[in-house]
Length: 452
Image 1: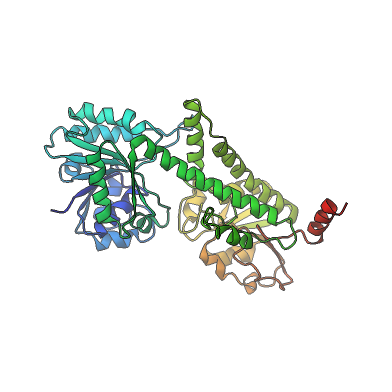
Image 2 (image 1 turned 60 degrees about the horizontal axis):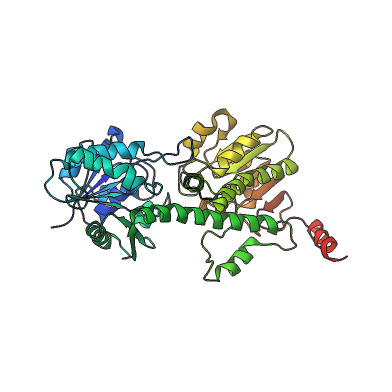
């Protein structure tokens, strides 16, 4: 008999995960306390914006149902993935408030279940949270013992918003923090059946897995920030080009090319808070996480560099168009978006207009009267004195010189999407983060440094 899954929490990750598992031929019961999310899935509507989510729900509607009923979700499934919010608290740690509530409800139902049931926590937490913060709740509410009567694992996913379904079904590896061998083996078998690419599985203690998840994200942000540092250096050396340098560095297997692009800083709902949380945990156990703290501090300074650069290029009260308002392409999320930070800071001296293929509504809610939202990049360009390309969205590759209608304009390209496109266009002053723009001044700086 095929395994039946329940997914507790139908938010950004949970809804996509439930649909992805159903797409592999398994029955899935999704649970959420938000009736709107439940109704959306049962009506074959995506409760959140995510690539291919609505299509996947529609294609697998016979295998996917959603409910607010905990008994239905737990009693009719064999394995439960718990994917509830673990928001940052005032200390920078991850709050277990929602996870504790979910585990409490699961425990109440487990009391009446005779069969072995596996619970896999997917939400990001800090070391010790699962074993010491959540497991006691399951045992207390159910009156049962972990290992004997039910299983518990900590098993986070490594996904990116905008490609959740693909990433979930095709991970580089699966991470399993297991309470015992039985729980770990069962979850490994489930992953082998679900995952399209049959990835390796790394099994370890729950605490090791918790630290692995948070440290992986911290390492990626360090790599991003290092590339951004190089990009800034490239703007001040003759013929500087971060892409040429990154391609060379990426050939070294110890480094690799991923996340070595150079551009605006990282944002979104995970990366910024994960470094802060790792630093909190390190300090709490009398350790240190200086690299994570420094990475976070450097990331916060990057927008100031761009803001100061725009101040030096554009006149006060100019109209600045920001193209790309989400924290990354293919997403509607503006949480910790560098574009939003840019818009807010520039709004003190400039008129800000903006456009994003998916995030217009959320950006307007975030910035309110500080920005005027346009319905296309062309409408932005037609009104702008300066244009900032803030995300590497493929749509912006379509920008052409004639879109500016001969108007004198500054283009500041944070991702070098239009590199070499405006070289001989007199009305366009093109600058790119990561490309040399110092001219003769850059040469003179190096001459003065070494010709002594």
